[in-house]
Image (cartoon, rainbow, N blue to C red):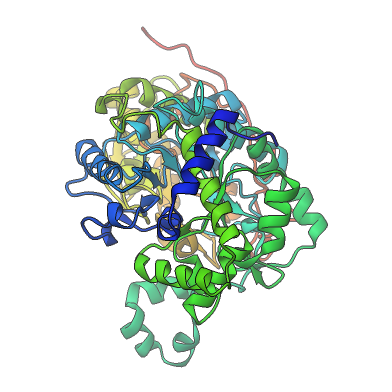
Length: 608
């Protein structure tokens, strides 16, 4: 790969590096979470970056408080001895999703179903505009995972199970984050993640949670971890996320590595390492993959950042963790809490020769290259766009378009869809009127939540806007009279990461009961499923007239109504193989629906 900087830029970085003390270099390699940073430490320690973790929001959570918070840290960084600009990072994985009022786009599994690279590129641009308006210039996205087992709680972060589709859409998103050029005030640095094969780990191989206490004494486990957390462990949480990938190198290179090569060609200057292991060795300690393959073979000129507290998993001795990770090729460490401990350990490791200072220089050079490429040295910290770009009409219209294009019609009998003109419609299910359920995890908080967590339009509101008084709502399915069509909206509970690993992907008894009640009071039943992955719905689909995979559409639920009512066509296609039974979840041999499935339905002329 050619160098990302001009000769002038390269000389600037080398001159700056030559002026830096060891402590200032280590400061640039340190990334704490903003809530753990003591006043004055950004300047005192020359910290290179801060982040807001999932739900790491200011109070109150508004675009104004976000901008004030980020700018406060940025201005302090400018007062350090060398005035090196700060790089602030967030998980804007489907819009600027930590900020109340931002536009929340469909999660990647839905965007994959659109197969529309131009759409994803425009979403990347809109995301960059909203993110940069709050002063943030680094986005921990896109995930280029290729999920192999839909029990994985991060399945919805993957565009597709096809390497080529993932490469194409991730490249488009990166181009959107860049805009016209990397050094413009609205460009945002992508973090391509998680290197590498994070989505191919084996069920039961996660070591993120020690289950020994749970297996021996449930009462003690509840006392230590909390009842709700133990309940999730019973359901399969932390069984596969952060686990071990045992595929051979040929498969790793053919299936999971190409999206990184594509991202590098698109100009990506940051990659995040995976918590997971490959053949028993944690990626954060994997010098062969991080240094020889990523930086050597692929010519990656940017920097590698660790994941949240990932170094701590390498060894019982924290200093040994630091030595292993930095020598393997980690350039910046997401600490995220005890940053002074990290600084002490790395300083000592360099002074004793356990980490060569040349390795530190290489890491800092890569970080400074990225900051220079973003234009941070020559730009004001003041954002170029006003805060009213967050959640603006243009971006919400784009999100609504994305929702329409992401829906996949997998069954449609007896002309159930689009909804017949003039027929009464009964909407069933609490999820039909729940913005939080539509958005899923990574929305305002790490795990997401229910209800009006952020401004948006629910599916029910969209149907009422389109059909007026024809729509009746019975959340529990108990209704009088007879209806032409019942739309049953079912949803997964919001989740994120390993907290969403699930052993059982079947619907609950209560959800199945809603379908039974719908059949009792309507001529036709339409099942709309809000989920971050395919669920086991073989029996339920057999008993309905139409089935729509709506994924996790975000804040613009009226986009679902647009397609159900026939104002726009169904165009989405499955990018995942949909398993038909629980014992065939990984690489289904007899799927209920094959990758590529998706029906069309006529567009109904709309009254004007």
